[in-house]
Image 1 (cartoon, rainbow, N blue to C red):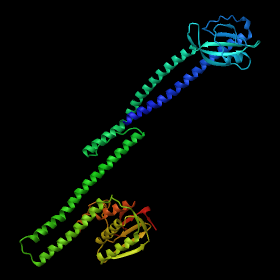
Image 2 (cartoon, rainbow, N blue to C red):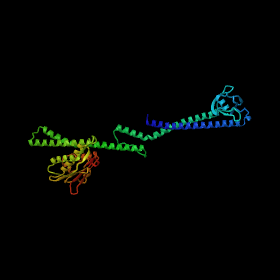
Image 3 (cartoon, helix red, strand yellow):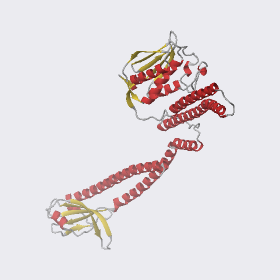
Image 4 (cartoon, rainbow, N blue to C red):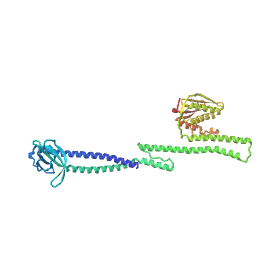
Length: 439
């Protein structure tokens, strides 16, 4: 069953319940009122006979209140309509019971059946009873007409409620239908550039806005993926071409001197190392969203291990550690090791022989400060972008992924990374982990 049909049924059901409750209340209130009027009429008639029994003619029309007077033995003294008294009536006539109302069925001489309202009260001055009868048709007919009217009104109200519920649900679910149609078209075409109309301030309007936000994020993600694939293909093409050229030379018929062959093999080794580094960086970026379970690790230990590696890789540089506070991080140790190494390697590449690099860890923030040329102002906003390489960096090995990986790792830990220039020269890169780190 569709949501629209369910909403229509709910609206019709609620109205049906309310109308039925109101109709039943109206019917029973009206029946009680008519019965009260009938009882009052019978009581007034009986009281009149009790006060003036000698004035009773005994020929009252049956269309009004019919009267019957009996003595204590049940003998009829006067009657406009006779019903044989039963034990309950005789008990009242004998003074053994109080008066009462009841509904009875009686027959006349023509064997016609009458449904009557009966009131039995004792005589006031002599033993006996006065009995008054009223034909129940006087209230049954109005009640039958009232029942018919209430049924017709209820059915009409339910029908109108169903029609109104269908219209309201159609109008209310129009944004949902647009969202569904847009989702189906996007699933069919694979292009999330479409947007649904937004308007209003209700929940469905917010749903439309959220849907558009999701589409924008999806479109941006797909565009980032396409750009990543294109950039990766471009970056891989250059070392692959160089590798292929050197391999073709080695496999060719040209005789090579030992020094030439050694240079070619050294080039192949260097290019294969660059390919390995590039592919590792691409995998790191591509799998950045596929997180594993977080574990606590000592960030200061990771920094010390990276420093040992940096000292071996750049022995001509002095690696200083003014402060390394014990710091525990809830996150991904392998990815953090790569990010820390990328920061140290980047500082080492831009530092000249005999210069120094200061590495400090304090308050959950890792700071790496070198004494190289620093960042050019036009490059500083772009240094964390994938594959970005400044004009000065293009002469160095690398693919422009190191600092991009640092940013990915920082964001995966809920932190940030910034790049600035020191006041007395050199670059300062700060990796802040905020709430992910603790002492």
